Amino acid sequence: MARAMFEYTLTVLEKMTFDTNLFCKELQKAMDRLLPFEISELQIWLQGIVLQHPQLNVCLPEYKMTQ
Image 1 (cartoon, one colour):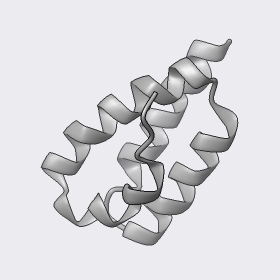
Image 2 (image 1 turned 45 degrees about the vertical axis):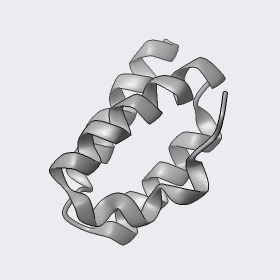
Image 3 (image 1 turned 90 degrees about the vertical axis):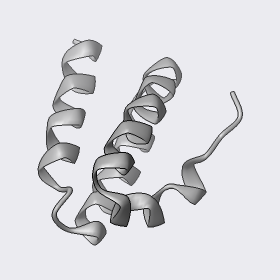
Image 4 (image 1 turned 135 degrees about the vertical axis):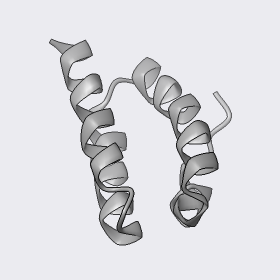
């Protein structure tokens, strides 16, 4: 079940890349709901998506964690 939530989260975030505000809101929801190891995976995924959509970089500074 948890894996399904992670995959769903990635799908939603991908669809929100057109709007920085929506992306930031969905990212906040993801950080609140996902498990710690999934957040680590999400951070890796975020690095790739920011390369494709540089405008999304504004959402990341508050989520950079050293785990």
